[in-house]
Image 1 (tube, one colour):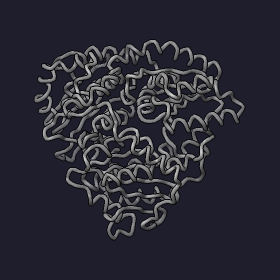
Image 2: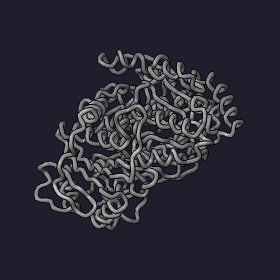
Image 3: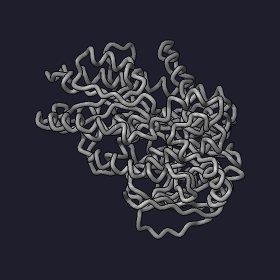
Image 4: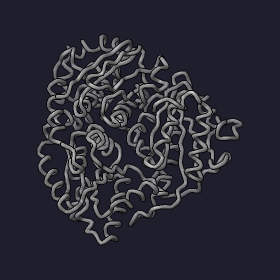
Length: 543
């Protein structure tokens, strides 16, 4: 197994000293691996009883490997060299990390933005097979992506059924419909594993294995990690990380996950969903903040912030105050963080396996798709940006004044969530505004691409502590993409998802500044210039 190490200072070390002895005495590690569903309280028992399959995922998933590799070889022999993953949340984040770390091409389509969808459709269709990945089998994004690809294959004279592979829970609507449709392959995952804990199940293994990742090595490493994590020992790194995440006193509820030479591509984005969706409920939880080692939050020293550095096995990192550092291979890290999140849930007194507030935005979006109301009138338009907001905007008459108003409303324990509903591939550099806004506000800032964050941090924003302010950015497109046999387009779908989420946040009393870019490139450039002017000292920082 790759070298696994952990170190901590300040509040993180104090939490370890306070909680780990009791966790060991109560045999929490071995009881988690024994699938003891009573560990998170009576209210959580019914859910946790059917959500602990992840502890044995490395073993249970072994029989999948042969079938995945056989299909990979067959596709390759047919000249199919490009795998597109249609998935959201837990179905897309883990495969993206696994493939990226292995240096293997996997196109992840986890968006309903018509320009991003159109770009993926236009690329090497003749060489493409798609993996449609949905635990419930009813996810609107993946259903829409499957429909548009199926039509594209048919229109190109390609047998669509031979190019579509399904990953879903046994007995789901997608499972039944796909078998009846005669798609190339249907892989079932363990239904006793929640989506965000599914990295080492079929949801992570099928797309990555087909793309060329050595998935057997991944499972072998995870099995070795399990042997360490099941030990009721004060040296158990999973217990120590879990204590740091959920056991600081007073609770440091902003966890800055800083990539600092781990060699794992995008790991913090995967951990962000795992932690936010697992802990953000009942008015509590910890908010993961994805950042670089030089981000403002890392050096800010705020009382509510804990920094966890993702480092390499041979790194000699000097920890600052209230920091932790962890090193390990990809499968090991995934298993450690899943385990630690479960431990943190126990310390926080919540059920880490449910997501009671995720559905609210979906319901609101469906209602808006059905009703098709006219857009809410803009408060004003400034250049290429329409501005919408509540009474808290005051007399703001420019985008700069509106952004200053939302930043000025952040409390001493508050955070800003930036949510960008447009093409995350074409406009990837836009994420740099995160560091700049953090420097300008002096508070933690998260950045999420919509609608994929709805399946992850969206739970914390609605179910966690009511301390967030929100900057939602939508964008007009140069064209739209029809969804076969659906009464709405991708453009209408993403607009409804954004409006629905804003509606739910506002209903929860959260301040939401909505900026609509009436022309994408011009609007992005205008907003970047405004944010850079608010925090010129942040422009050189790593994101």
